[in-house]
Image (cartoon, rainbow, N blue to C red; front, top):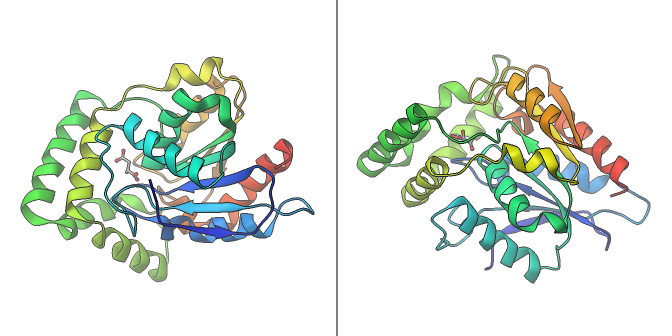
Length: 260
Ligand code: MLT
């Protein structure tokens, strides 16, 4: 399937693909993508920042589960010559990355998990998803944006970041929000996949993240057979938007080790 995307840098080596979170689009990963695209080996590096199906400028997908969304991403990556790649995802983008890893891990040179987790939703979290579905259906995207906003950022986030985040969240289509909430609610636990996987994993967490706390990321990096952790001081759940230079630096170090 065709997904809206932007490419930073060039080169015919292994590319880096970055996925946004919920209810967001590729604009929150743009700055990190641009920084990584400008780095890399002398031969260059291609970084592709993608709008997931139904988000941003991408058309709706048919996928109702995280696995199906990962399958739609796979079709896009194949079409663009982006297999194999290093795949990175912010929050819900991390869930998609983990679903992709489960099915297509042999084609991943590395997995970057930012402000996310591998565990499934608890019963309480599933109940919250259902309540949010009702809000989205009844009141639309702005109501979801207002509900989520207070938890998204660290204390030091400036006015520009706050404005950008609100604008992106309010622009997310209500139908996409409903589909994504159900896919997140029903996703499985991916933790055990990482325990035995040979794919190198980098976990990057905002130290002030209250949605997916950094401590969980430290534990996850320890569980992964080839995992490592980087904490981003002064950032909340939107570390790539809040502290793009620190997130790009963490990923750059990981890519250098991989020779990408
Ligand atoms: C996200 O940022 O993608 C969401 O907060 C993830 C979630 O709600 O589990």
